[in-house]
Length: 522
Image 1 (cartoon, rainbow, N blue to C red):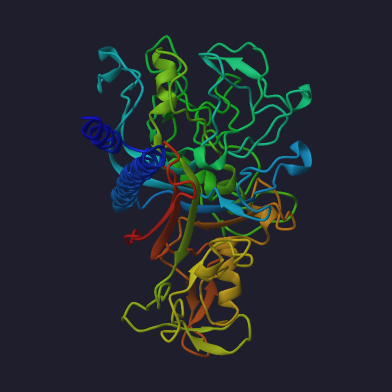
Image 2: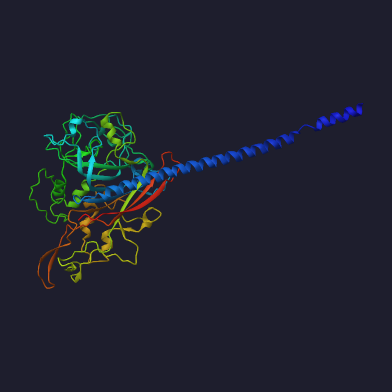
């Protein structure tokens, strides 16, 4: 009996688990749990990355489609201008001791390029208007719709902490606010003064430091050219909803100054004819009523005596407008600040341009190529237009890049049109007509010697069809004089974007690039 009990007890004891066995089981279970968790984490990361990629692809496609649609409606009037702006990561380091993006190298650069052109086709205002303001037969002509508009593509400045119905007052210290601007909260001289909209009056200054580049806004800002019969500030309304000009420094009164730049209005009481006369006029003052018989002379020539060239006037039309991701209030005046947003997180926006072989060729009445004088060497040569070496890649013109380590755009082979044209001295298109004499001549943001911010501008003006003026018979059958205002439109532009998703899943962002052909509008 005792023996049987002893055997039963041993069997009972052997039916349990030892401590070592339990520990091994727990370890195995933990390994399985960790492995499953990692699998789910990886799946979650892949899913999040996929969603972020899809978001960026959708946004890039929307930007491309919008630009293609607008450029397909390019107007034969007005000008076409590109301003390239390269900002180094340490642009504010001397003032603030901080980089624009701490995760990137000190010498890394961001692009904040800008594009202005004119577009045909019906465009309504984005601001709220009531039924009384849409009567096309009214005495004041207050019809906030237009068949012609100025279009801006580029970054914006943001003031998300500003109070409702308040704006930067003339951008304070005279320096243009830009997407990389910074203020020292302990130095009142660097703060941005604010002004109430629309009646003026100064408010409390605020810190104007802009968000990191991964949060920069890309804007598409159309401005309707709608002459309202001499009332540049109002459309039969109690509130101002139009500016006197597309130029931000136009002195139409304290309230009007910079109203388009402040993002508050999208109508300018200016016709395309007035804009064309202003651009082709060499002078310092804005011609409020240019004569109907005005005859411009060599509009892109830099005259002496301190007067402005047309390239300088076009450069003055550029400014970074204000834009916000969310409106400061539900007031309709604040809602307009968000209407022009095209991309919500765009750290770089770069534009290059190019000519096809033969662009600029001028033909005689009988269809033959005119013979002309090479004004660089003095030799006779055929005026063949832009010369493109077919054995080489397509030349892209713009802001020449730094080293590949410093500039992510350097590998694209961008160069200035002036440098390229030196290889082809018979080119009838004068580089000075497009790029100006020097960066100071065309850029409001500094000069080429400023290493932390570099700029470049290419402007294509009202004369797009005549490289030379025929003056009469000569030794070669004709005498011809170069037309210094000759600047045909580019054949195509190349746009390079770096987009970031709203959740920051793809920390480095993704780069997109597309080429848009420019229709002939001579």
